[in-house]
Length: 127
Image (cartoon, rainbow, N blue to C red; front, top):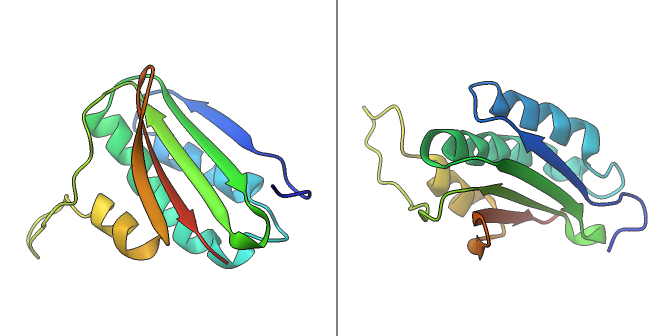
């Protein structure tokens, strides 16, 4: 556990502004001692996961950010749907379908946990 930054949580409405809110919250809430080197990548992944929650999930949407010391950043995006995300196989012409694939490639680890109200998709990026 990080002694610099406590874990934080954001509750978001299911609207088109949720990804932007999540990015701004991440920028303000990340741990400046340990997470600065992964902030750009985490911002992209947060945007993708929150967008997926808005488009494919169900309310409520929450995002949790936790610093695990020098090991990096851990982010969970939860929504009220039990439908599991899948890695897409988008073609060059496709406008959608790359979000989970980006999480898979960019993060050091990721997964999906069932919750009492749906699911949580999480990722970890190491510094």
